[in-house]
Image 1: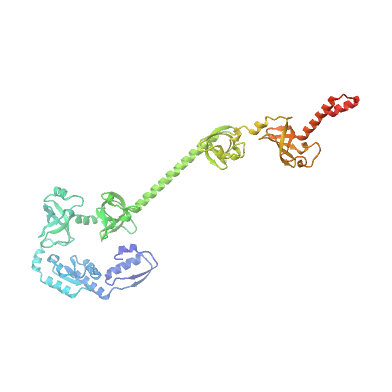
Image 2 (image 1 turned 60 degrees about the vertical axis):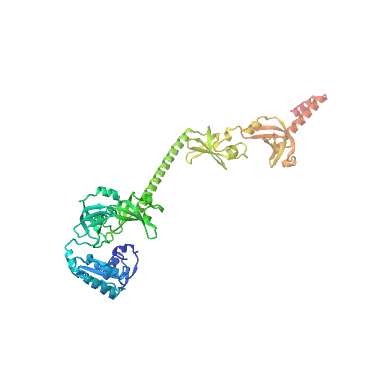
Length: 550
């Protein structure tokens, strides 16, 4: 962590170990440690690894800065020791300068200063310090003192000026200094071109601008209107409490890339200042080309504000997630509503369909599904019944696929309706004439037929009258005499004469008798014999024979 705000990135744990860079500012460390222990309570072990000599140097620098009009910090810009020292004296002296060599010194830096302090990093060679002192001793401080009566100018100062001239390089302004200021068109506006600005800016216009680094005593003072406006805008940006965020409408200004030319995010205008939107926070999905976002206004949330560093970070990620979740929820609710409405409509249609059909009546329906166990047939809107395989045909070997396919119309009879369990039993077979009855109706009681024995049972024999019709010869009707089993007299495949003695077409039962055919044959033979000879028997005997015939 470098500052108190960085504590928000420290995870919450039970124990913490703390060490310090040897050149870190002691007071700043103490402030951070105190805030750390308040925001992340736990067990702490602190190793105060700040170099004693460094701490003493920092204390001396703070004292020097408080007593000086300007402070020069000498040392490498990549030296952490020197950088921390410079940050420290900046807090106590407005005119603090960090230089690496004496060649960077100029009279402009020290104009209006009576007391000048010099300090250096621990690793800064003594020769560099001596060179800086020598250069400053040879400066014309008397001339500088006279010039100090003019406007004091230093990088970062905001000045008010008047436009005195415009040319191809930019806008020249006078602001009470011995050198005029120059505002390049690119530092006047980011949205208007140089041509547009030349037509709109007039000599005599008042402007507020900020002094930027890069000016010399013989050059125009470089100024920036944009930076001054940004500084003014930052005064209106509110702090953001830790863990909170606030909504904002942002406008995309440009694409930001790192040194490796990789896109890291977008620069956006937000609350009057320039903010940063990380690439991963632009959309929920990965974006390959950000060029289409430039100039667009987007709804976002401010997730970080650092007024000290003038840093503001915005994100669309949580907004997009919430929007996606709202859409998903709305879609789910709409889907559930559609399903409920469709279910209700089906129930109403089904109820109407149930009321439109009756058991025992015949209807025409459409096959909606062919299954292994039968056909599903819609006989009314929303009312589907089942024709089981056993109800497809009088031929039990017929399967559903043999009868119909999806979309075919079939005639069915409603066998039963179970409203509670939502089941309707249908029959195609019941709408067809029974082929057994058709064929059996050609036979009559008293018919004598040549029949084939097809099965022998314990109580009789099954005989075949035709291809579709079979009958039963009871064991008592097989032979005139008593037999123990049908197999004593008959065998499968044997053809015998039998007479139909009973018929019940509704029950599909036909009874036959073999013994009756034999008895009738014997009677006929006896009658024929008795009719061919004259009787010499007595009257009593004739009567007895007639009685026998009967």
